[in-house]
Length: 165
Image 1: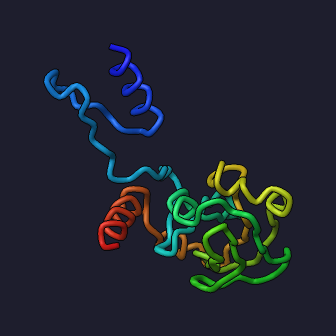
Image 2 (image 1 turned 45 degrees about the vertical axis):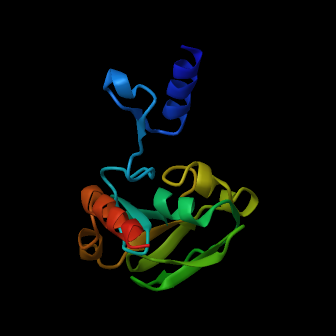
């Protein structure tokens, strides 16, 4: 009984579910994708997200991207007032594994940067969609936002990408 309770607690912590058949009480099935993908955001194939509200779009890297990077130790961001272009780099994220360029999923002018990331780059790991946002942009072509993937498309994209590796 204690083993079953421990296994159930471990399964909950790891986001896996126990098999429902009694004779398989200790069997587990893993979810295909552990990353969080939020509805209401748009996603680029380079694993950045966009939240467009009014005249400003907030941009960051996805949970999937931060999970693959590992512990983020340094973030390079542009200065406010700089123009960014869709698909072009605007900064970099350095982790214990690698340094990766971060591409802008849309074009526009940077109106704000998340200065908290300078002192606490790990916010990208712990809160990629909230406290770990990177830049806020005034879009120059709002139609670019609509050309990005929704949550279902992005989830499928990640599953297919992970299966091919």
